[in-house]
Length: 376
Image (tube, rainbow, N blue to C red; front, side):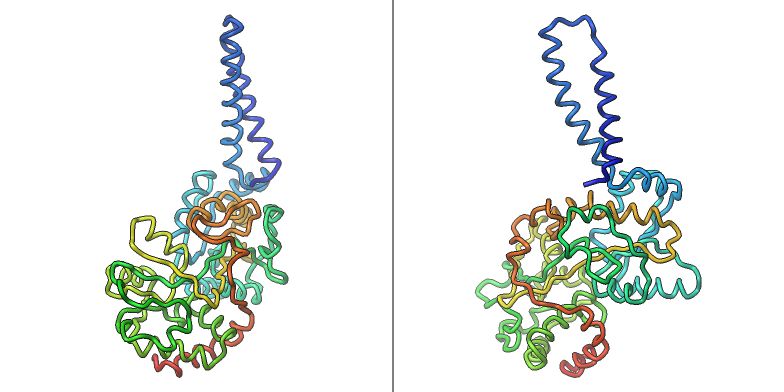
């Protein structure tokens, strides 16, 4: 999961260290030497793996990035971005990292404004695929194909786009079983078209005007189910007085407290995060299928630190992939398994989703949603 040159350099350093150990204690007897050599073999293997793990890119890229000494990342994955950055800084302590983490469209708007004022700060963009698609179409990225792509499914490098898919999330329906005992629970999106009275004031959902994930779901439902059925789903949410959650933490807080123990959807990584802390939350994939929410990564056009940007992309496509899998997110790397407790990605019933079409229709679709629901 790293460049061959850097791997070889790291491994040679470990071998040299092991060789130095072997030159000690010349006067030991044969039996002691054999035991020590067996132990030394394990040391060499462990050191070889350990030393190499810190290299996610070619040595020349690392050297150039360290010479630049700085990196600015714009991202819209608040729970995970700090973890990726912490690991990157651990591997490359000579590079100072600054971040701006906010909503996906917020970071887009800030970047566009800064570029217009000739004050570009972002070297790397890490956001949902709708934002990445728009930015690619506007030529805001510098095309970079990481050598790590050799380990990925072809879908990780979308044709005609200047970004890479770094991870994939899926939507599921969430419920807090401590507060929904004896209550019928949703199994499909269309269950909301005729919601039971028991769901009154008990459901929350996200606003597609401000949430990239919520808009992607709205667009996917509209494309797959049609106008009439999609309208019925969202009108059903209004009928039961479902609460619009302003942010993911706000929605999860009401789910966990029992104030609104059913969520129209939750992403699988957020579900995993609360369950790992012992929350009594269940996750159900809709019977009619789920859209896939891809996160992309790219180096920006005119990046102040282009080599550090490439290094971070390589890192996200290599070392960070294990972190992604452990966080219950899907990796498209062929050597990474599906998240624990989740079906393999190729076993999921996925809803087709045309991002380009959704973006072209975004303003019209949001206006339609507001008219259908009466939300102002």
